[in-house]
Length: 251
Image (tube, rainbow, N blue to C red; front, side, top):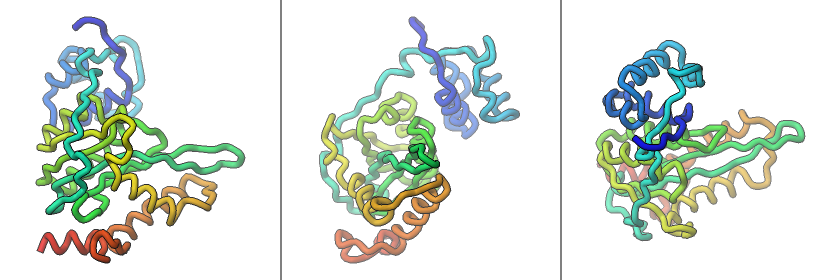
């Protein structure tokens, strides 16, 4: 296997959850992690019984590594090519992560929102919130999108953030029947509608306000998305809401 790279707790969790969900065979997960089948079985069994604490390092059983193949970047071409029109829902999805801040006394804390937007009806397909911007955040968003739209096989576009260029994330998209596309380096406009949604959310609910608790920030974000999909009119949609347009296509 050559030089090994240390397996982080978050990367270990992704492989374990893939196995538990039936999307990845245990032997394949072990191969990607660069460990034996028995070690992978041990990780999965311990995670089932102990949860997240089982991901902590604990001697020889947990000090395993990813092979270089797993850490290799999966950078894709810009297949979307700024064609922001879609003829039907679930044809093209965009995704990104944005940062928020809140205050605990004088201390500033960061908080992250990951979301997937449908280019046809501009609805938020799925979203996830987390205190850290990491692989777990984007994998969780993808999990929710797939669960809500099991028959969707869209073009899946993102920037070249580290979460989207992992081989594991790429393989998950392929397994779900999706085609991956990525913005060019330094070209935010390649993911323009997604950036536009961040702007709408922050202008209407975030800028000019000072959030003094994590709970208040979570409530604002969840409340806005609950309002946006069924209630926010958009000129781009002929002065309809995302869910109105979605319903028209479904009919």
